[in-house]
Image (cartoon, rainbow, N blue to C red; front, side):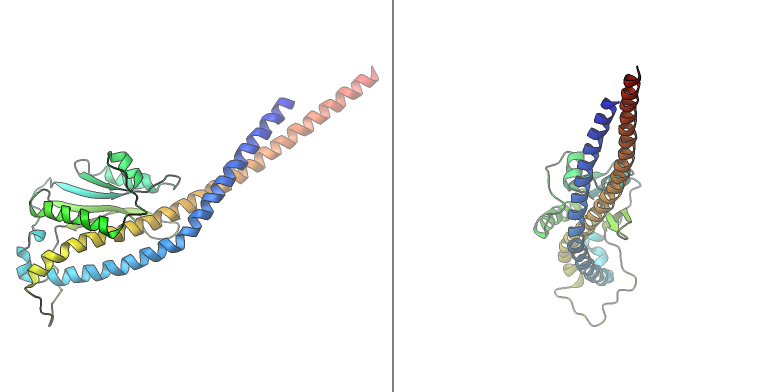
Length: 269
């Protein structure tokens, strides 16, 4: 009986340590949510401006001659996907959902961003939390150059969309080729030297901007998912501690009762 109570004390101590860890991680995630959400909202505003600009530029018939508007004609297009995952685990299904969606594109060439994605696809480690516009623009220039040269047929970004603090969904956004906007009249705007030339120069910033926007959104999702996962883990740990404490009290009471019985039996003999 004494051995049983000792084992229970050890388990209670172990689960209590886990509870302290999950609580600390929950507090860290909570402290990051506001900043991550603000960055995400600013990136969304920037993205809206970029998309309106590209829509305006692609509305002109001459823009159809741009190499970035080359239509996909193959039934099995050569695909490149920028895949964004987290730097750490313990975030519920955040990383798993991204990799599950990626499995639907077995023939794609993946460009990973985030430590978990880099580990999975065997690339040099980079951080999704600390990935800045200069890096995105450098990658964008290379991708745009390869696309113009016919190195691949379409480009997508696989990221996680922020729906709410409790809900995040893995998505893929197709970036290239561009499609013609049906209602993007240029009104009285005059482009120099012409609309197609402006479009060709704007695409690199468009791709880089979309990368940064989806990165900021994905990071907000990662932080929210980790907070929810740690909150849930903390609740489970508290329930386990209560259950173990009850078992310990019963075992301790049983041990005391046995000792009293042995004393009484010994005194009566």
